[in-house]
Every structure is written in structure tokens, then in C-alpha cells.
Length: 266
Image (cartoon, rainbow, N blue to C red; front, top):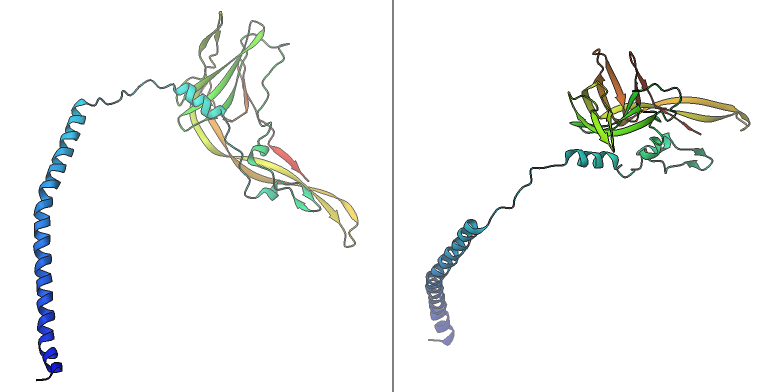
């Protein structure tokens, strides 16, 4: 019998035997290891459960303060303007130059000086004259500044007003008690209403030979999101007011002074 035949005949049996032994060794090791780890895992889970139970029994939940300074928070949120953002279509409001349009105009620039100036002249103003300005608003509350002409001078106070509430109330300022009642009821608050505004654009007219012919003024209408409220006076008459607009309350009349909503561009 040749050596080659012997190796071919018994080599397969030898390799198969080694494989079976290795498989048995692996199964035995896995079984023994698993049996040894189970008590260790059980002890860890039991210890963790004990710690959690002890913490639940001994820990005290933090106290939650139910007192919220809504008025102060709302006043801070409404009087702190958001950062200016670049317009997506700034060329509509840019200054036309030989090099193109000025693209550095923001929404903050469009709303500059958009608040009506309250009355400052006390000459000829009757006592108990009242006026107010919308400063801002959320879906639930509005910040309104009420001004009262009392004892030959103007007094001002800001109020946070909810839907259905009367705008203004009596306030003690120093030694004086000033009646800021407007007797107007807030009926609606729209924090992001589309407010129309107009831009006047100047276009230079030239002929085919580039000779100057004149200037053409065109007016374009746009909208910007702004706060708006609706209120009713004592007679039940309804009025709408944009942010920054001045409302003058007379004995028999209510006058809303709109702010300028036109901006010129070249």
C-alpha cells in the first residue's frame, strides 16, 4: 500500500474527527459559560432594582412654582425686537444704481419709524383725554400702552390685555392714582396679519441714444406680517388697529391715526 493511498484514505477521517472534537468543545464551553454568567446577571439586576427602589422612596421631586410673571415675560418678549433678516427679494426695495441694486436692506429697515408719534403738546388738550398704541401681541395677549392727560401732563402705562378684556385700568403712579380706563373691549388679536404697504420706485427714462428723457414714478403694493387687534368702544362700534398706530379717544368719537406705509426707492 502506497503512502499516497494511506493519506488519502485516513486524512478525511482525521479532519472529521478534529472538527467533531472542536464542535463538542465549543458547545460545552458555551453551556458552562452561560451557566456561570446567569447568576452574575441576576445579581446585577437585583442590585440595580434595589437602588432604583431606594431612590424612588428617598428622592423628593423638585417643587414647581405656579407663580408666573406673565405680564413681565410678555412685555420683555414683545419689546425685544428679533434680529433683522435679509429680504429674499431685496431688489424690490433697493436703490437702483449704475452697478445694480443695493441688497443690504432688511425687513427691519422697512419698518423704521413706523409708529405714530403720541401727542406731546399739552396746549389745547382737554383734561381726561385718553389715547393708546398697540405695541405688539401674541395669539392670546396684546401689549398696549395707554396715555392719559391728567393734571396738565401726560401719563403713560403699558398693559397686557387678553381677548374680551377692557383696555386699561386705574394705576397708582407715585402719589397719584391715574385712571387709564379706555372703556374699549379687546375682541380680536392677530399676531401675524398681512399688512399692505407701498413702495414708490423712480425709473430713469432714456431714448435709443441713451439721452435722458425724464423720470417715471411707479407705486408697487406689498405686504408684511404685523400685529393687529380689533376692539369695540362703549357704543359697540368695531375698529381695527395695526401695531404702532395711535388711537385717540374723544367724548363721542374714536380716531385711528394710521402710520405712513410708503417708502421711496430710486
